Image 1 (spheres, one colour):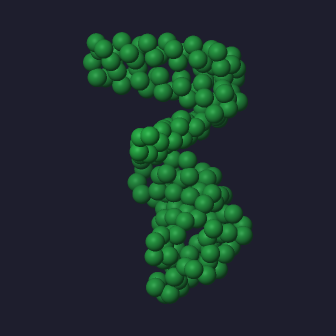
Image 2 (tube, rainbow, N blue to C red):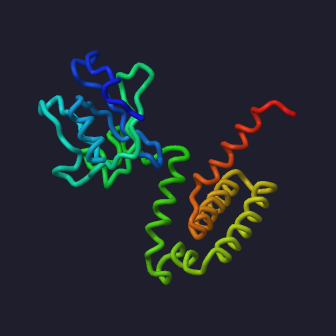
Amino acid sequence: MLKVEDLDFQKGDGLIPVVVQDAATLQVLTLAYMDRAALEETITSGEATFFSRSRGGRWRKGETSGDRLHVVSITPDCDADALVLKVRPVANACHLNRISCFGEDDAPGLGRIARLEATIAARAAADPASSWTARLLAEGPKRAAQKVGEEGVETALAGAAGPDTELASEAADLVYHLLVLLRSRHMVFQDVLDVLAQRAEAAKQPPG
């Protein structure tokens, strides 16, 4: 558990840098600063509150824009003079109306999986007549599982004899339908990653 009194605010003249990450995608959203009061308010409120060096005082993200950052976890570094803040963002983190202050690109790497999961979750409430995702979810796990099977075969055929572009396209369809199937079973891709992590840990154990 984070202990505010263990942090070294003196090294930065009363401020510590805070790297803010999307808890789902792990995309870096912004770099900000906190003094002790801002950190304590963040812990109490559950919303990211920073110290603005330009304004000379604290400010809670979203007070004027509504683009809030709901805190999931706060982790200090090994020297206790910096923090990683994992958040669930509401709208954009950047004042330029971008997801991240570090460029216009969306979540990289596996972060795209979490972003796609969020889209699938949002489409669940759509009209099945106008959304393929909503239709699959409305028809239940068996239909989604059928599509995973179909896309798996197409991916295998593309892998065996198709060009790279076809394999990538079919694999993308397979991943999408797998995420829909997981959603229909009230699961997320993290459940899959957890199993992989458990297997990796088991593989480290000496035999016998």
